[in-house]
Image 1: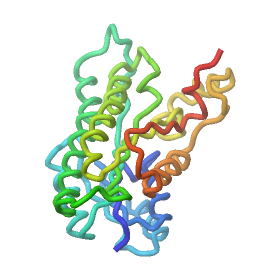
Image 2: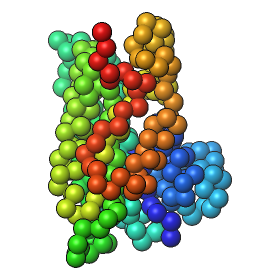
Image 3: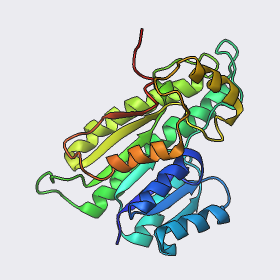
Length: 261
């Protein structure tokens, strides 16, 4: 069997870019998403994979722990192994409110999907990997499994009209460190991929704003990022070619994170 990757939100935007890259690398990929099966997208992905049985779609929410177990078990039943988890699914606030005016409903929704969801899906995935693997006699030279958390430049860059989103991504950064430390003795490595401004449907409504910011020098690379840029970063990290590294942050932001005068 090919190596198996689970990609939450892997049917659109950044997640779709990641799914495509992993299929090109020979992975079998299972997507978790809340929408009805997108027949056109799945047809494209299965053609890319060259085999219908290398792509699965599970309808569910990363915010629901019951869906976590169902999602992971579906992959185990189909393929008998687990190699990669990409925690990509996330949402922006429904309304960008100043933090002086923002309410609890949006805060709970954003943190439930962006932080609590991947935190506990990681727990479910890691336990399943350990059950499949069995006891270790010695730590292997290559990772038993790889977990990638897709966060955001907003983990460290303040936007006072979407504080809930920033806090959720800062939490993902800490969750990466926590899981990296806990799972390293088990042979599981954990990374954070931190995108900047990526052209997706989430950012479509603020195109004019970011066009102006890029023109004004917001990033050393004056262009929008693409889902394939993030997919390429994930592709590098899940190949197992950095077996003595874990907890690392990989920026995909055109250099936005570089402090400049």
